[in-house]
Amino acid sequence: MTGTGECARWAPGDQILWRYRDNGRAHRTAGAPPVHICRPVTVVQDTDELLAVWMAPGTECVRPVLANGTQVHAEPLATRYTAPRTTARSTWFGSGVLKLARPGDPWSVWLFWDRGWMFRNWYVNLEEPRTRWSGGVDSEDHFLDISVNPDRSWKWLDEDEFAQAQQVGLMDRGTARRVREAGLAAVEVITGWGSPFRDGWEHWRPDPGWQVPPLPDDWDRTPARMPS
Image (tube, rainbow, N blue to C red; front, top):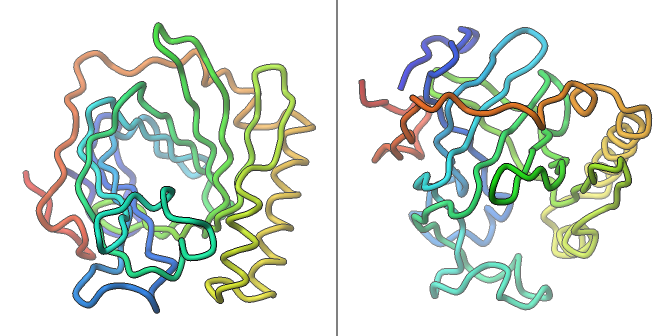
């Protein structure tokens, strides 16, 4: 994997890590890494205006699980964010995901397809603006999301999780207010059909010569030591 220096630009085809820090640090199992989501991706575009990356089907990723091995979303909402957690490796099944992020925006926009490259929807993931490092980008998820359909209709997602995160102390009132404001700003972009929704990314296709990026053993380090 390539990319050197915090501000260096990556070239199309470079392989980097797209990571999220653990929101539930107070409930983390001893020895669990501070990063709880890690997804190896391939760079599509990296400019002053946009970072676009592709997560291919079959990518080995890291995801959070409860300390007893239970899937996070199988846990009742009341204890989902207080039960001890750890991480597990898993494979991303189904179609790949194109992720688009403008520097400084407190969200990224993901594109999903069904089989046969039938475009399904855009997904606005509200998150901390991403921090670049030599091996990729790091952020922190903000629970609340937005789904945008091909007909430009949209809806809020995971409002119950957003409320629960506040209730159990993973997000204070001020942060929650900023997240909601960020979501409303994203809605303005959606209703005005601004970038990246208007830019035709749903017609993009990955280079058939790209290999699926490997998950490095030290995926949780900053900076990670990448295999050459």
